[in-house]
Image (tube, rainbow, N blue to C red; front, side, top):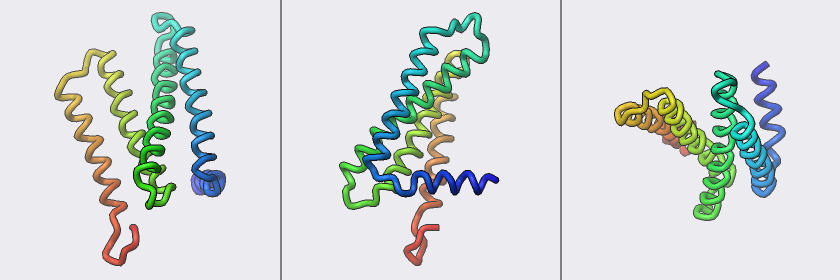
Length: 147
């Protein structure tokens, strides 16, 4: 069943132009920022408990992910005009996801009183290793093809 969802996702976005991607992502990001503002103004953290914190961090994560993906894809498209845009968007999304994970995890650790210099260092090292794994997995092999 997971393969069916993946194929449906690929089919839905396979024929999307870069402009269509930017429009879709911008609208989704505006919706995420709007949802975060609604959560920020309407949910009382002292009374809502875990669901309130979950909505706060989830909407903030989606908003950051969208914003960073748009900015990253735009900069990559402008700076590297000779490369395929779909690869640039994938890189921008991956790096936006990792940076969003860093920010959200840091905020959660901070809210729990667990954020220290060494936890931040470990988190950064962990995310750097994840990025290196992606880079090494996508590295062209001897025959010039990506694995």
